Image (tube, rainbow, N blue to C red; front, side, top):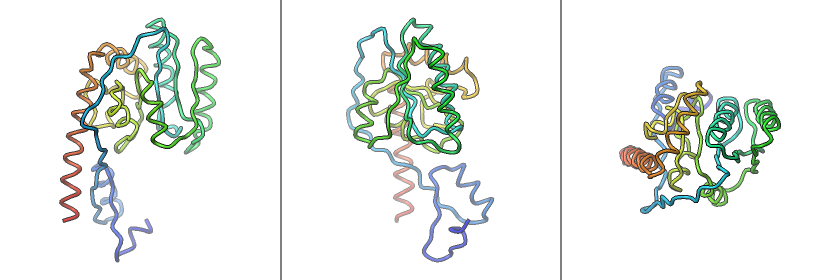
Length: 225
């Protein structure tokens, strides 16, 4: 609100058209839409992983209620049970936001009750180190209630990792999107992308991110010119 009152040499911008419209309506200001731009390498390695009795699923990001970690963990456990595999569920643990402490406590309690599966707790790391973790995953999850871009999903894409997300990650493929309020929908989504390990789902996600980048680049160039 304080920024909105600054009339000289201050420009408010957002990376989401929805948020942009909301700001303009609520604050009665002009806000500039400047979406994220996430560089994609020319070649992405869609390499098949050797299937083992362990399935590694990542659900990264700061732990807060709107990230929906607990329901995703429950769905991942059910998915692993269906495959008769041991789940290694990877999360970040040392960045709690918006009263995220109870969420982490409940996730830990869930895995204590299901000791045949493993909760893998990673400290917050720099992007280079984080990408080495992502490479080892079988599936990535980002089924959150609200997003404006979601960098972790883009990280999954450039490493060729299949993923399930909510509709909030607008650029992602339809094959990746599930209902964040439905346990059944998330489990079905995990089975769907696991069944598309011929890289169809990953390629569709890549194409979606490429289209997003092109639109973002055009908007930035238009604004800067």
